[in-house]
Amino acid sequence: MIGQILAWLCQLIDKLITHINKKIMPKKKLELRRYHQIPRSISFRTEKLRLLIGLEGTLVCTSPIFISGWDWFNVKYPSGATQDFYVKHRPYLDIFLLSVSKYYDVSIYTTKIQEFAVPIINRFCIQFEHNFYRQKQILFFTQSCVQSRHKIRKEINMTTSNPHNVIFVDYDEDQCQANLENAYTITQYKGQDDDIELKNLEDFLIRAKDKMQKHREEGHSVSIQDVLEEM
Image 1 (cartoon, rainbow, N blue to C red):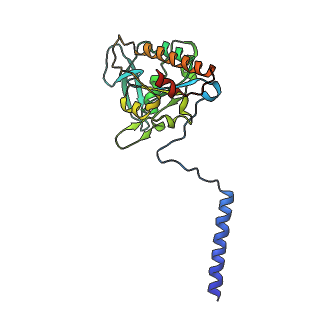
Image 2 (cartoon, rainbow, N blue to C red):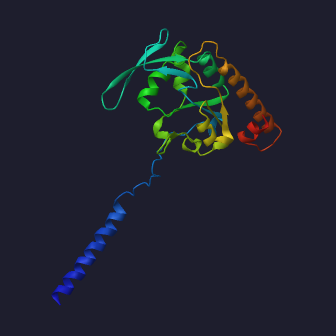
Image 3 (cartoon, rainbow, N blue to C red):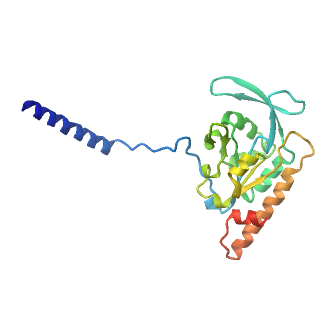
């Protein structure tokens, strides 16, 4: 008899403790496996279109080997190790960024880790006062990508809840294929001096912006995917 009473009391105490914990302990936020929380764009307030553009091979070319005329930078890894790299900006880069930033919320989206990407991005538009470009933009690194067994994949949905106003630009066909409705593919930059891809890209982005604006003025409900399909 006494044993049954004690067992009942233990069960009652256990239920009371569980109930109290549910009331006073904060609920744990559920995470979606490899997905990470990231900052969101301010596009919904500015009504600008968004441009997600790659870094390595798209805006710059890098090498771990010294190349005359390329800028040196040093990467400090979380482990404490360091490594020297050399980088060359794609021709017309700074002017391109400053120009399209007037019409788009521009974010750089890279599969590289932050420790590698930031020293490169820190030198964008550095000759302009207060580094106009870098202070305005949101950056997305490896933790904003989808990790798979074979490749780190960029996905627009990892950077915004509204993919309908986003243009995704990259040289990597696989990355563009993963974001097909929003993608614009450019040629890979390998350090050539006569490259004019960013000039062509600027012209394309301005035409896309003008088309979108015209649709809005005419009262048409269209997405950037519709505009890209028209072009």
